[in-house]
Length: 92
Image (cartoon, rainbow, N blue to C red; front, side, top):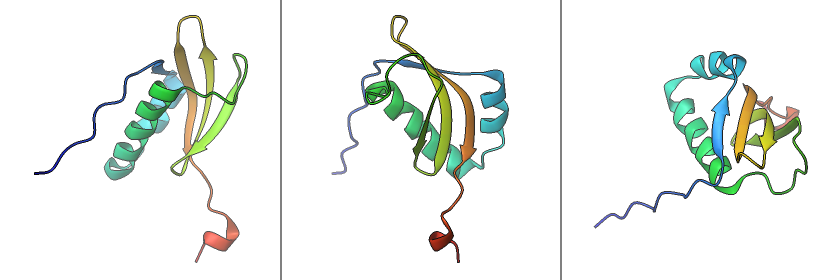
């Protein structure tokens, strides 16, 4: 019997700015699934190494995201979501 992992409990709510919505709308379907998982992970774990509101940047699963964080409201707002550029040694 296959077991699905339990859903992560969200600590933050993840919002997208209008610019981020446009960028996410251009992501291919299979990449969107990965991006959705990344947003769920950010919502559950936040960004413990970044202090203050931001703006901050994080690269996860091949996506570079710029965001601000409101610890009082517990909201991460994504302002930019783009595919991270591959390092030269990874290209080929």
